[in-house]
Length: 123
Image: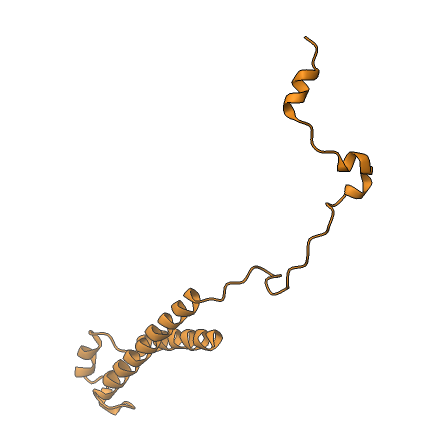
């Protein structure tokens, strides 16, 4: 759905650019008054201005709505945990990696008390 809205958004933007470039500026009316031939155009003397203005307004509305839609899609994106987000977690191994290399008497011996080191040092 997001891809469809994005395609409509891009097409609306390109169409708005084209329609704005087709429209006459304010100074073009003076040239038409001295025989510019606007009455013989496809839309009539004032028809092109009304049609192009309305089409531009409709496309601007479509552009605005698709902008809001893309913003909504961006804000409500599914939260994933990276590439492995959908893989179920496995159980941790019973022993730490590399602990098989340590002899059993040393592996099972509790950690030394930090105060015992101070007692072993001769004064």
